Figure 1 (cartoon, rainbow, N blue to C red):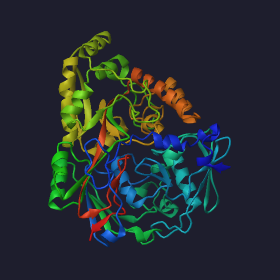
Figure 2: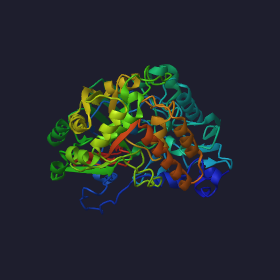
Figure 3: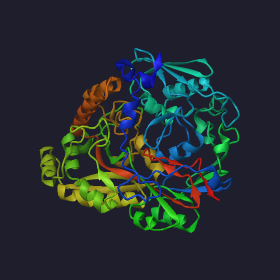
Figure 4: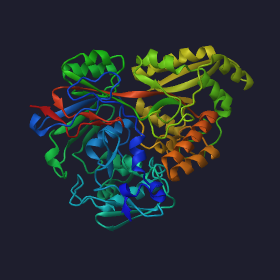
Length: 547
């Protein structure tokens, strides 16, 4: 066995965890110089708090744009739950501001056997869960096996071909793979790598989210549905001396203007998902700082083609023209002017997107960036060929936040010329997640915050049986290409395969990609140490109030 970073040149090892590919696939733009205010085109991630500039104690209030879903790493699917997890559920690995994978509960990057099928992960010793029980390799084994076996698990397809997990001693985890699996390291730097207390899992079972217990700077305190989530400092945390705050409270405020008002009034110190309508005014206020970074993800329109009975159940054809006929789905994409949409709705602070892979990614290619240009006449022609009478009415499920409704209304107006009539069905965000899982939608506006490995932005959503394939789509040719990319031994090989995958996606079109959002977070200068990296997660666990 050899250290992963030294073994990258070996093809078999590279198939399991290419650290260079993980770092390169992140679109990280130029940053402002220290002390310089970043421009709209520069990434600004924030800076860590220095111990001598912050005081001990206090409760940080974060104004959150949507309610997190279940606080269970095996089941969670929303970005907003990741904000809370960041403070209370550490992972085997994390991602830094350059989107590089770094150890967290692990003590080093994995080592990998020559055949690429056995991965060894060393983990910390002397660490306690929030309930006082020991964190060790056996706990990692318990968590990973739960991800693989829990019926509703959203992690199952993320961690792919894991066969068995062993814990030969308290500080060593052995993962045995059926086949080499390039995206594994990236998956373990996300929710799949969040390790849960075996004692809490045994006690709570599938109700773990009601009182989650992990390793982290903070521990769960209480949750008031549709209102707030509170965590308090955990004295058991192995690096408790680095924690300055007593508590963090996430308050659910879905209206961006209200979040901004709370920030200005001092009722909140941090606000996530700043509206592009408010960015300029907030940046001008000397008492506030706005962080901006390019997202690894996308926003798009998911079309329900086969999710008739709920995610995880066998798919069957939905009996609507847009579900049955790819020409109708292609026509819908031709009806959309992405550039006009971005400029009108987001003041140009987003980038048009035609696929799941960022142009800045090491896995990007000309083929991966192919795009159907806006062509209403072509859309009408395809609808006619499909035998669809116009205007063709389709109902779109969307979040009821002002920014999302503004996007939905712009789309509604835009596609009329091409023969589509969108009826908007706005619902609260957590209800939207439930409805999409049940298959109770025709088309759906939703996005993905993005991950460092492209597999996590594609396979789970459009691969057959993917844990987040709410479209119910299935394309054997696409599955074959994605499987090859998971086992590929070089960046160039994976790049070529992902180009092929995007071509197949464009033909079938179960998901129409629209744009890549900017991560926009604002905070009061009374607080030091708030950071947001390209993964879009607010990092406030080590923040503190200025002296």
